[in-house]
Image (tube, rainbow, N blue to C red; front, side):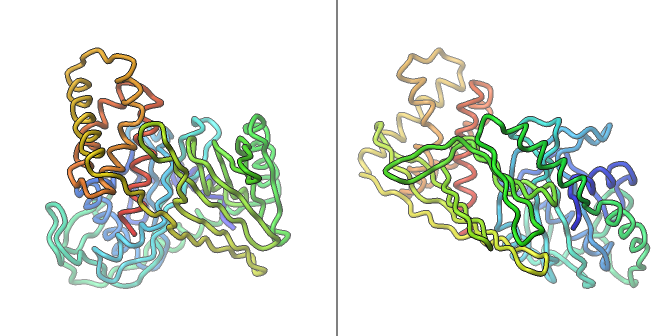
Length: 377
């Protein structure tokens, strides 16, 4: 099993960007431009390295290779995006890899592109790229090219060497468990070994509600791979496990006028097999809450007024500050009740919420995470 943290270090230390490896400061898959650029790089790496794994490391400063990290990204439907826009799409996996020196809410994103041995192209237009375009790597740049020759396999030996040097061992696993238990000692850290092979650690603030146990500030890591499977600073989560699997049900708190209710968002089941393999299955459970349209019109208009005051830098009174804490969630509720323009307003609010208060910006990121999951499904 590959230790993904070690793999990232080997990629950063051993190679500049090339035909099997790219690095990015961040991705933005919320907008067409960001999706288009991501698809272009997937296409180019798949075509330029058709017989080996290719990688994109996200959260690295291009100028000095410094690991700066990005937000945890748990979009299990990213393959849907690949399949929708690419012909002969490769299998693509996005993983969140924690590093000890990063803040708790930051990770390094690792995109693995499985070998395809086929020519991949854009299926349809997106942003400024036309359907039918074929991309290849030219050094560190993904470029459109006319395909007229067979691609030579020049990467197998070097990719195999990098992956071999990133193999996990007992020392790395034990160090990973000790590091997790120490770092999360305030959040009831636990570990369990599955199938005598997989070591899973998790932690969270425990809360009991009507004989049910929930956790917040949840962190779950598969230590063998140094891979963070789940992280949330705000959500409520229920956790259950048996000898063969580990189940996470994520809840989100939504409501109006201080009348809030927890709604199931998504269930994730990690199944461990006897052959040293595991699978992760996710299922969306969310059902959008419905509210009176007159009430929502009032809230939507109030949000718009509040956003304008924020954009102009005007001072907010205490009631408006409280409303601002719920602005992202109430815009989301409006959208889920067919206020289509609410999402445009929410995206417009992003830089102002980020500048105003870190906690309020965290609620925005949580809202966008919910939206992303719902829209993909």
